[in-house]
Amino acid sequence: MSAAVEVQAVKSAQAGHDWSLWMRQIRAILRIEVRKNFWGRRALLIYLLAAIPVLLTFLLSIIDNEGGGADIRRNWASAQEAFAAIIYNGLILRTVVYFGCAWIFMNLFRGEVVDKSLHYYFLCSLRREVLVAGKYISGLVVSVVLFTLTTGGSLFFLYYARGYPANVNYLFDGPGLTQCLAYAGITILACVGYGAVFMVIGLFFRNPIIPALLAYGWEWVNFLLPPLLKKISIIHYLHSLSPIPVSEGPLATVVDPTPAWISVPSMIIFTAIVLFLASIRIRKMEIRYGNE
Amino acid sequence: MESQISNLKSEIVFEDVSKFYGEILGVNRVNLTIAPGITSLVGPNGSGKTTLMNLMTGLIQPTRGRISILGIEPSDPQELFRKVGYCGQFDSFPKGMTGYEFVKSFLSVHGLSNKEAEEKAWRAIERVDLIDAAHRKVAAYSKGMRQRIRLAQSIAHEPAVMILDEPLNGLDPMARAETIRLFRQLAQEGQHLIVSSHILHEVDKMSDRVVLINNGYILAEGGVMGVREEKMEEHPMQITIRCDRPQEFAARVFASDSVVEAALHEDRQGLFIKTRNADAFYQLLNRVVVENGMNIESVSPVDDDLNAVYHYLIGSNGGGQS
Image 1 (spheres, rainbow over the protein chains, first blue to last red):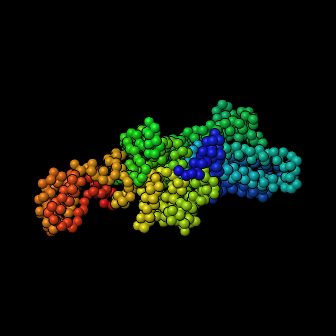
Image 2 (tube, rainbow over the protein chains, first blue to last red):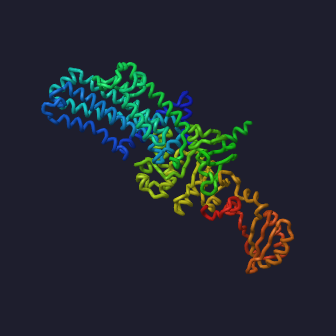
Image 3 (tube, chains in turn blue, brown):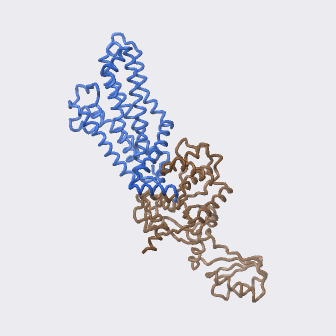
C-alpha cells in the first residue's frame, strides 16, 4: 500500500471525515474533464452550437430593416421582447443550452463508456459518489462558461445595435444590468438542472438520445399542459425567472409564474435528488464495454 | 479466530462466487484462497479469467457469493484501490494525454498531492522503462508501449495486490523477460500478483501457483507440481531416460509397483517410463544405477510442466497459445 495514500487516509480518518481527500479528488477529476471537454474533439460541436445565437444577434444588429418592427435600433421595446421570446427562450434556452447540456453531460459517463476509458476512474481509490460529483461539476463548469458567454455575447450585440449612449444609459442607469444578470442566472440555472437530468440519462440508458428527445418534447409542449403538469418541468421555472415576460401563444395554459424564491430552491432541490439517483446508479454500475 | 482474521487480511478469498451475464455463465461456485506471491490464472479464451479479475476489482459484481481482498470488499473502491492495482486488457486511453499525464492524472484522482503524484508517476514510468517516451501522446505509442504504460499506471500507487490481465501481450521478448523479472521482484517484496496469461511456458516459469479455469469452473489450483501430482492416477508421469543398457534397465524397474509402463526408444539407446509415483521411481532409478553400474546419459520428465497439466485438464494442447 502506498504510504502516502495511507497517511492521508489516516489523517482524514483522524479528522473524522474524508472531505479534504474528496475535495482533492474532485479537483483532479475537474482538471482531466474540463480539459477534455474544452479541447477534445467532441467540444467542436458545442462551440458551433454556442456560437449560433451570437452570430444571429450579430447579423440582426447590423441589418437595417427599413420600417420593420424587428430592427433593434428603431424599436427597442419590441426588440427586447423578440430577444426574450425568440433568441433567448427559443434559441438559447430551449435549443443551445438544452442540446449543449445534453451533449456535455450525457458524454460525461456515456462518452467514456463508448471510448472504453471509464474503468480508469473505477480503478482509483475513489468513492463513486465523488466521481459523480467531480464529473457533474466539470460539466457544469464547461456548460456555464460556454452558455453564459453565448448569453452575454448575444446580449452584447443586442445592446450594441441600440447604439451609444442609449445602450450604456439603459444598462447602467436603467434596468439593463439587472436584466442581463437575470439572463445569465437563468442560463446557469438551466445548466444546473438540465445537466443533472442528462447526466442521469447518460447513466441509466445505453442509448440516451431517445429519452433526451422525449424530455425535449415534454419541455416544448409545456405551454399546453394543465397547471399541475406544467410545474413538472425545468422550463416552467426558468420562464418564471425571465426578466421580460414571454408570451407562450394563444393556445397556452395560463399559469402564474413561480416566484424566484420558490423557483431557484426548487431547481436546486430537484438537482440534488437527481444527483442522489445518479450516485445510487453508479454504485451498481458495471464495466462491460463488450455489451455497449 | 484471531488467526482467521489475520489470514483474511493477507489473502484474497472467493467464497462460493458465481457471476452470470443474464443467461450466460461467467464463473460458477468459485471457492478460492490466494496467498501472496505470483498466482496465474490459466484457461482458454472465455473460460472466466477476466471475469474473476473484474470481480476482484469491483468492475462487475457477483451474482452470488462473497469476495474479500485483504479483508476489503470490492464494493468499497476507496479502500480497495489503496491496496489494489489492476492492469486490464482494455487497450484504450483517455484522449489526448501523454504517457506521463496519464499516469500522473490518475494518481491525483487517488488523492495524492501534485508533488507526490509527479514523483510516483516518474518512478512507475522508470520501472517499465518508458522514460524516453513519457512526454509523447499515448495515441502514438506502439502496442507494447501502451501495455507498459498501463502497467505503470496500475503499479504507480504502489499497491499490495496487483491484478494483471494478459500483461505480456504485445511485448517483445526483451520486454517480456524484463516484465517477468519485475513481477518476480514485486512478489519477493511480499506483494500479491494475480496474472492471467496464454503463454504457458512463461506462466510456468514465473508462477508460484496456478489456477486452472475452464467454462467458468475452477478445475485445479496450487503449485504446478502439486496439480500435476493430483492427476497422477489418471495420467501417469512420463519420463524419458537415455542410458547404455535400456533393456536391462527396463527389466529391473518394471518389477516395481511405481512403474506402469516401460517402452524402448526406437534407437534402443533409451527408454520411456510411465509412473504413478515419481518420487518412488527416482529412488528406484538411483538404486538400479548404483547396483548395476549403469551409465545414465539423461533423465527428463516429459509432462511435469504446466503445458501438460493444461492439456490433461482442459483437453486442448496448451502449446504456447490456447
